Amino acid sequence: MRILMTGATSGTGRRLCARLLEQGHSVVCFTRSGKGLPSGVVVVIGALPEPGEPWGDNAARFSSALEGCALVHHFAHVRFAPAVVERARAAGVVRTVCISSARRFTQWPDASVRQVIAAENALEQHPEGWVALRTTMIYGSGLERNISKLTALVRKWPMIFLPGGGRHLIQPIFCDDLVEALLAAGHAPGISGEFIDVAGPEPFPFREAIREIARQLGLRRLVFPVPLGPAVLLARLLGRRHVARLRRLGEDRTLDIRSAQRLLEFSPRPFAEGLRLALQQSGIEH
Image (cartoon, rainbow, N blue to C red):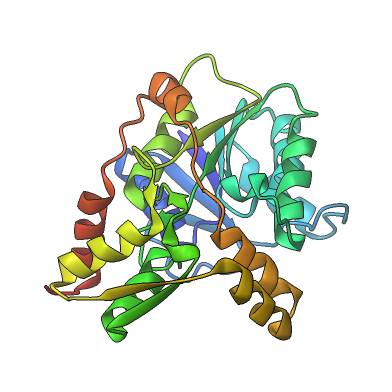
């Protein structure tokens, strides 16, 4: 099958691209740069239009990339998804698999979150031709932030200060598990025009992630809670963007994955197992 992919230069995007090649597909990557992509892909250089902007010269490039494709994996930011779905449907592509974010549920949206919400609302105006996987924080690819930054923090500092005490729940997903869910979404029957939530198998407090990272690194770390209210007041001195980020630290970031388990046979690995693999792959020794 000939498959078009966007966002292939991200960490998880590269893994998805490699898996598609392993399955024997012909992969066309529409990208600003082919840097870091696996050998064997067809690279079409171009840029997706910002919401509300015209395609311009990229219209012809995107159409040439779409030629002969039966499926699109849109792994670029979801704000581009409505335009990609529209073009793909016009070209006769039956399904575009998109990626979205659980951040859209935050009570403290910033400009980026508002882009996610607007894109999801726009996708819902298309009754068919797409499926979107909404995910929590991704870890393990080496290029995504989140857990990799937290690991660096745990390695560097013997004492960790956590706003709110790290009591909020998280449900991170290992990158390879997300890739398998995306692959399943590309061919699973009976799904169209819907969002499917994917995440780790179960939520756990953020502070437990720090403890697990320290345990696997063989380090002893002390975790000190910092009241969220005073921390927010201090963050105001750094700007509104930092305040919103800090407030979101106190929110639970969890999803109900039962639909993914039923529709995609989704079976994510526990955080401890995924973390062990991530540390091994990054070359970090105990």
